[in-house]
Amino acid sequence: MLKLKNIISHLDDSLFKTIEESLIKNKAQNSLYLLVSYRKKISDSIIIEKLKLSANSFYVLKSRLYDKIQSHLSVEMNVTREELIKKLDILPQMCFTEPREIIIPYLEKMESDLLKYDMHRELLTVYSVFKKINLFTDKYFYYSQLYNKHIAYSLSIEKSEEILGNFNRILGQYHFSRVSNLKDELLFIKREINVQHDLNPSRQIKIIKNIINLQLYLFCEIDSPENSSIEELLRETLKIIEELPESSSYKYWTTALDFLSFEYYYKIGRKEQAAVFYDSVNSKLQNILLYTNVCCTPIFLISKLAFIQETGRLKELIEVENTSKNMEMNDMHSSVCIGIYDAMVNYYKNNIKEAINCLQQLINENSFKDYFHINIEIKFTLVVFYLQLNEFEMALSILKSIYRKIKLDKLDNYQNALSLIKVLEQETNNKNGKITAKQKDDFLLFSARNKNEILKHFSYTLTKKYS
Image (cartoon, rainbow, N blue to C red; front, side, top):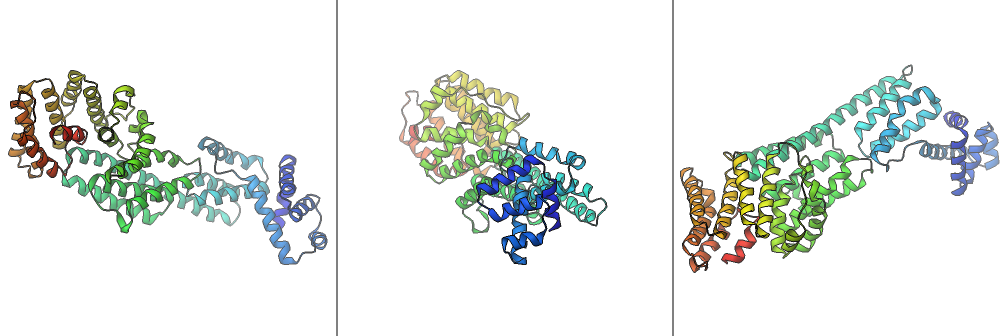
């Protein structure tokens, strides 16, 4: 293997010493002898005779030594993204500073490792250098083709991330409206990501595909695909992320996956497991709304309110809550969820007037013309606040406006809202504050009809009051 001889002869002294020490440490005596012999330009015949090897064994020995040298020359994949970028940045410079015997095994090992993790963007730098150093060889066309291929793969991942962002934006609209045409759009986007995955079945696109399927199940009541359980999808996605090198930006996606895990375990009633993921996500509450390009994280604020009521952890909200929340610019879904969340925090701190101001501000600053569902959630919440202050006329006025809208637009899927109106209307008549048997019956009917989850953020507290 003439290439191995050339590589060893061109190694600088410090790298040669490092490889030598590694072989001594690992007691690789034959590889060590071969390394030193090639450095001294001893012929193959003398080495074979000294080590008493067959021609085939000698070839295997050279191949193993070549792999070991490649490992020393190459970049370690489990480095930070900043360190990997620095390694990639020096590749074009190496074209002008390193012998080809050194740069080629370096590039080959880097190529092998990057391919292992489907790191197409990083591979573009590698293939660009391969093209340059093979300008006068028949491999130039080969590396040009690989370069073009990984441009296509890189664009495919970029397109898939764009599809995911679009999915999350529409899912936020669906969360506020619950209209069927938006669900149809989400299912169309699911088909889009399936096409991208068929074209480029990389780990990154698999993660995106799984996140879309998880959210369709959790927030749109659509079954998981291909007979996979949701728990299996969560485990599979986490495993893929864990297998990626530390330099991968997808490592940051574990927070979004923790959010989806919390939503799943809370949805199926496994509250102990939900609590583990809740604590993980809640510890990052300040930045959780910056993950909206990965999944629909504003929903966590609403689920958190329900979860802490149900698990008796309201004290945390009242005593600890003072976290500001970063969010994307012009993100209505996030800003409205924050407004509801802040209103509920004030309510549980007994700052009812401030809670009302939070919701009134949402109504004044946002148009809910196309978002009836979230509009009545805000208005029903306002009604409860007004009832708390004995402002019965204000409460009754809002209830009548909700009733008229449902009847005029023939919104038959909001029978639950009509039942809740009856419960709260009776509250305006019962000035003594006692809950009547009729209210309890109407609230039971509301709970039975509440498939589209009106007032999830308030449901447990209301259930305690009216049941």
